[in-house]
Image 1 (cartoon, rainbow, N blue to C red):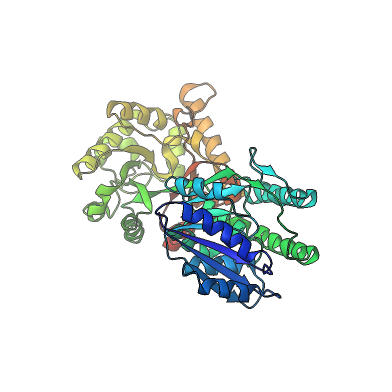
Image 2: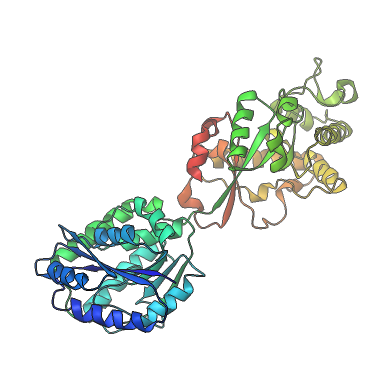
Length: 477
């Protein structure tokens, strides 16, 4: 496996040749290994660049680059950009671990990045106490505040060139936290990171004065914490769109989201004004389809005279407030409800769409007896999914108010229907790992509050509030 080895060097004239000779002896002992060594001198005050250049003239596998100012991060970045081979190993000149080299190249077949950790439980760190203490404090902050799941971010590493080059444009640190920020982004973007323990010791005193290094580190750590939202672990987000078929503008957004592989599923209003136009599009076949049960808007699928308790004298559904009021007064016939829902399922299938789930327009199945009727029909039709309100998260104040109001109405409907306290069936059952969030309630995505979740489905309504702008959905991804 060809490999590029990058080593930043700063004021290393005394140790450079000895360490490079040691490394090349090891590399030459690996039969058939193709390699290059890239030395990046950055702002040295001694003869480091001259020594490195002189050595490179008689060794074609060594390349030397010089930067005007001391910058560990820029040195690493330039080394990555110069690397010719797919596998890259990053060493410090005072920390060349041949055992790590062997293990890391083997593990790159399983991971995108391999980190040599000084803080691994099986690592052995013989550096001075002050350096060990500072390392542990800094990485405690990185783990607890920035959400890094590993034990160490600074030091020797191996990575795939394609992966690390994708990370470079995102990294703003130029000094000692460069590779820390790179690993935070790698974790955020889902790249696989493995750690292996290393044995570390101090070959020579650090080349940077403690005072300068300390203030550089504090400044970069502060800037990293300011950019915390970029690094925290976000849940796996999927999107579900309600109200498919309800408006032409909303349907155009839904269609674009499907084409761009952003939308995972959608709920269809089979009595919507545009459903015949929308259902003809081929991309609806590529996502999961739910029936969006509608009893509170528009014209029913059934003949109005066959469901007289659900429609007004114009043959249209009552609005949600009027429907609830009539239901509380006992003016809604459950047979009419069942007949209309069955008609909507029949129309969905007639449109050539498979029934993958059931939910409802304006949350009407959150109420009894609609909830129990939907459950019964779903069982008869072997519907794999029904929207459960036990899975709904309400984070912002506005969402909590909306959810509480719906809960109050739901409990009231259950009491009026069955003369006992409880929740409709759509509020029961385990969460089974699903988490739902109505973006029309939230108005923005509260990432901090949901970062502990593994998955979440954002329910959007193209044409309403935050859902109006298709670009906002791309941003969530």
